[in-house]
Image (cartoon, rainbow, N blue to C red; front, side):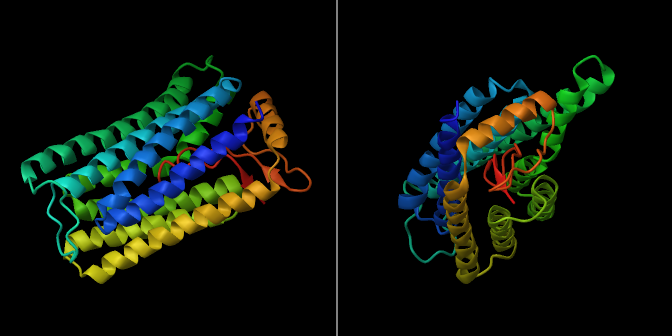
Length: 305
């Protein structure tokens, strides 16, 4: 069982960092980079979800984590479909290099692709609302349904609100409601800060990477709204690249001090006591927090203090 921890962390890391670099190349419309990275992102996301499901068969109180992963996978898949449309049949805009479209401009086909991508984002929102309903509303109507475990799972869902706001932002974006999407993007930043403060007690490099990603998306939305110059697109892409580097540094730093047996034992104790935050250990002081998807369907299954 302990051996599943490094695999799960590795798949989450590969998913996260490939998504960051994919989005940077997507902003710059470089299909030779963003398309292979998009396939890698979805593949690693599915592997991470599978590892998470296998691990949590032993700890059934973590059912909400699987719903968070499902919403994250829906969001990633929708964004990758949208990216394929941008790279193959959409107009390139004000980008001087002409690497896209790879096929030919076809706005009718592109409209269909955007609608399907919007439906995928809407599905992610519905998955999140389903989790809130079964863990937050149903236990109040039927008190006999293990209230302690339901409260813990509901807390995980609430602390994964940024997953739902990301889905909502991109749904609005796909419908052309850009000002509302920008407001929701700001709400995502607030949700990420609340998640970090509640679960970890402080901001980590991973939190900073997520916030930089949100800022880059805000700039991207403003580019769409104002038809801004190329330099603003370069700034947004640069922010995402720095985010990917921070994710990489955070992963390497945590691997140096992590103890897989400690994490597995901590999660077993968490399952027994139905507690979200565990007492800190000595050297290193570890708190295990099973949080849902982060900025790109990101999952933080470990936090160091």
